[in-house]
Length: 224
Image (cartoon, rainbow, N blue to C red; front, side):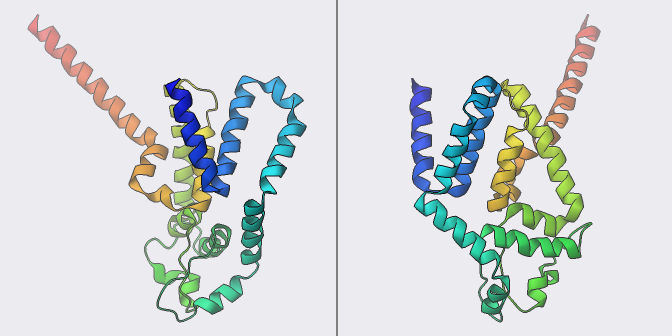
């Protein structure tokens, strides 16, 4: 009963945020659960699921957000003009941020620009723009090397979590992280990095545990 109450509170909190990213990830979690538990029912009710997705996307606040995102992505030049020579940075929407940072990735594909923000193409153009996309900032700052590092270890960590907590859907955590990283930059925060870099620390912990066991066995054998 306590689990149901906590789940109800979390769902209510998520629904009241009116977050497009939150709704998309919620549908992803529900779909993953249905596929792993009731695949035949999912195939049977697939038209209903498609209708539900379309209905959610057509809600007034969702529709307005989607229209705003599409409109802003087509007005990057106008955004550059508005932010030209300003003292404070302008923060564009998530998809516009992704397009802007992708240009830096194309200019510096292997290692990125690192912490040399003066190498950003928008900075060189005289504009002050602060991108909010996590995956875009990772690609622009660390290039293909950082992107591959994130993909490899986030997938490995996702599989490790599913194995440890014994749930199906090995890449579910990876898809959630990827969905969050498109919209927000929190993926580079230390707390969040602990999740998608879990296997890095897990390997070190396993080695330390094995070493400690070997030491204990050696002490035990010498004492006898």
